Length: 333
Image (spheres, rainbow, N blue to C red):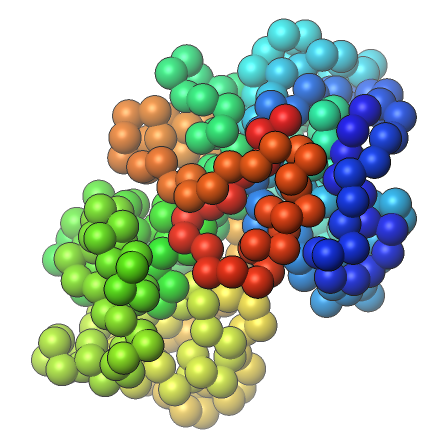
């Protein structure tokens, strides 16, 4: 099979498409013929070695976690999905097992979604059926952004009428979070470059701030007397987020889903009257099915900005690392 392969830690320019053996499903696993796989910034961090102590990759390594495809073989005890089933979801590198033990639900591990075939654990909330009317490309964009957005909604407990400032609204997670916040009745103020302003408004934002020409925190304070009810950070590193939190009213919430996160002690000292949380993606039972239904019915819009063939996958990762990206990049097998 053809697969995108990393021979070691390094930049995306070192990725190459190569021939690898088709993996064989073991107990509890399914073999999926991948139809589409979506890129995530976490792929780059893994390849760059940012998590090498917690998640030491084995090389050659096939990147990619979010996918959609068709089950073509089932290992012993992996009968949750039959051969021919259309599925989507996400998987972690096997090396992430120690971290995954702390998760609220059992993870699905994978041999890497950027390949014509990949293995996944079938008995986890990390896999779900693709409903009729939803394309594999759309389904592949949902797992990590959508599950992160759902986790932010649970933690934020947003009420209708609240004003929420979303930093990085035009990115992958923003493409799921902004529509879900709008559907919950929140007034969303998003940050984006001018070229993405209409896109972010189309997601459901009431207002869009050009973070290149104004200070988003100062502008939010100018527009919302007393400060916004909550700030959700999808873009800024820790120290910058600590400064941006001045846009939040006393007693408000700051939720962070960006890497690296701010130092909890520093944040608490700077803003003792705010609640600050770093929120991680989690795949709860039924969450993927919920996301698929919201995408099928249009609550979650299509956020694909560029498509690539598998032969172009190295360029896709180079674009993710070096170009401004709106929404999601998808590799179609």
